[in-house]
Image (cartoon, rainbow, N blue to C red; front, side):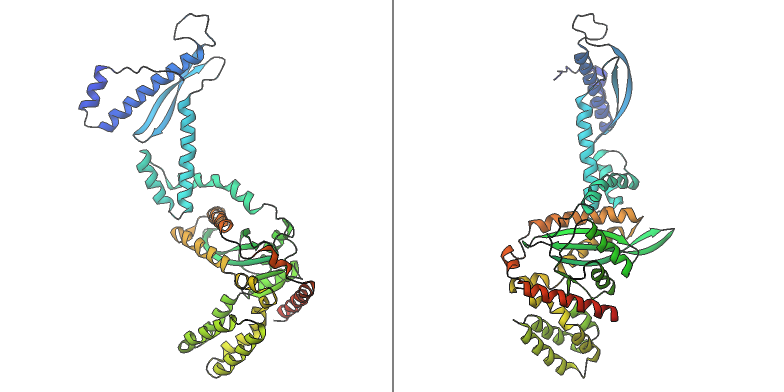
Length: 414
């Protein structure tokens, strides 16, 4: 490493001591010091000082160029030497490049964590002594795109995820000079070992049958196969898409959404008591006990909550598909709450932005949040263990496949 003996003139020392603008004085002092350092680095690489004749000389000077360097005390203008044959290298700019990369990464992480681009720009301006615009922060975030694209399009190991959970949430964005709402679809897979992973996400115009099928088909094209059961709400687009792409996959109607559907149709006076009884029904030890409790609830509320009881009666069996699996697998698979929690996290971050400038920005930010949530899921305890899968007999698998076919026919007739 080159050693530098820095020299200060009397004028520079007086300026540093007497000036009212200490930041400017320190900026000039640092700029002078770094320029001296560059000169010494150049002499070391050439093997000779300026105008020195020596047998150790390796190359010759070829002028210089100016380069700016942003620091906490302002922008420095450095005189960078140029060599005739071999390019000049400086540890100053190598370190600066690493610092610049760290700065860009920090800006992107701040946006992902829920800080607006305007606030990020303000913080960066305070830290670096140079103004950063909202567009600069947005450009920095675009560096996340390759990593996010690689994650959401990565291959899926065939047969590794027998359980699937899907859901969607909506974000506003600008499109063709107007504000529109678009559906952000997410799929979470649970492996045979009880491990959860985010398998995919994408943005679509709406939740139609065609868009849901496009999303599910994308998962299938990447390798998703042999799905035994999927958990979702009763959206007809999801049921149609899964029936088309995975006709032997049985549907578990999300019990959380099912309860909400029932309560939304009930008079306000009865909602609290009805919810408590519904939860008792879902926590019964076996399907016979659950059916008995259902009949009791329908008998008690049929006069005061007619529509709610119709929903309960029509959707009960689909919400109880999970009872065909081993007991330890029932609780983690009976709702799509994993995806719901992710959706809440996505909404928390999007509330800062409110309206995204375009489709790419939704994929970028929400994709980054999904990747972070994916890491969180991988660190949590398993939902069940591999031994649980061995408890599902071939007879049970056959019954599940038949039920899947019945469910699909009913969905077409609905």
